[in-house]
Amino acid sequence: MLPKLEVFSPAWTDYELLDTGAGSKLEKFGSITLVRPEPQATWLPSLSEESWNRAHGSFVAFPRSKNGEWKFAQTLPPRWQMRREKLSFWVEPTPSGHLGVFPDQASHWDWLASLIAFAPTPLRVLSLFGYTGLATLACAAAGARVTHVDASRKAIKWARENQTLSQLEDRPIRWLVDDAQAFVAREIRRGRTYDGLILDPPRFGRGPKGEIWRLEESLPALLRQCRKLLSPDPLFVLLNTYTTVLTRGQTAGEATQLLSFLQEMLVEYPVQISAGELFFADADGRQISNSVFARAQIQSR
Image 1 (cartoon, helix red, strand yellow):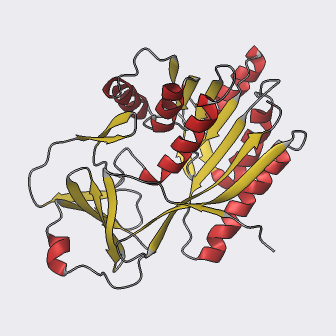
Image 2: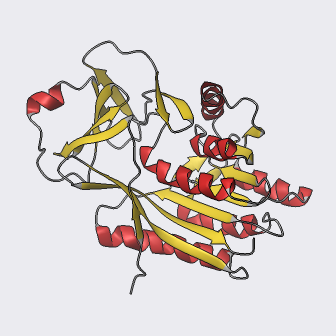
């Protein structure tokens, strides 16, 4: 029997899932509305065809490719600003269909910020696969010293621009272009430790020197290594992955697997571990699952 799982949908003012259906979703990013593919949306849209046609742009995926093409109904700036709580950041359409922000992750930003803000001493946090830096910036804004690692030089540049936009230039953040597995191995040899770990790995990826990452093969070994990076008195570990499945039962199974990974990693610690999924619902309440997670709050502090 699967354990009871948590389900979170964060509050936003600058993002909204307006409608879903016919294999697509209609979203609002700031003042810009966009249409992107959504295989989970097997039902009919609620809004009129005219409403969908008023979108500023749409993304068309290439068959058998992770990339595609944006088609814009009107001229847009190459990037624009969005804001949530203390964070301001750039949004930009990319060839993969992503925009530099995964709005569902705001549930994690809130959880991380609350833990860090109430910690008795400043925390050292490691963010692996950190992308455009929004989880990193949420931690830094709450008072943590953060090491941010991503294999993409473009993502690191984007993250640093988000730091400037959020007026957090004075916060102690190390930005590193590196392969996560190689970096962790070096940190172990250096004897460095962290009070909190964030891992947001892709299903598949390549490091800056061509290192191969496959989630099912690489993640368990990486977590065993990350265990050696925990400080004598750690506070949290957050593990998030993006779901590729379309049924609630399969999504629950993926979240439960992540939970078991953290249980194995933290078996020697008094710990509270939860797992579940992050989602958004459109105006008719129809839910789109975005990612699955497991997160652990270690009780020794």
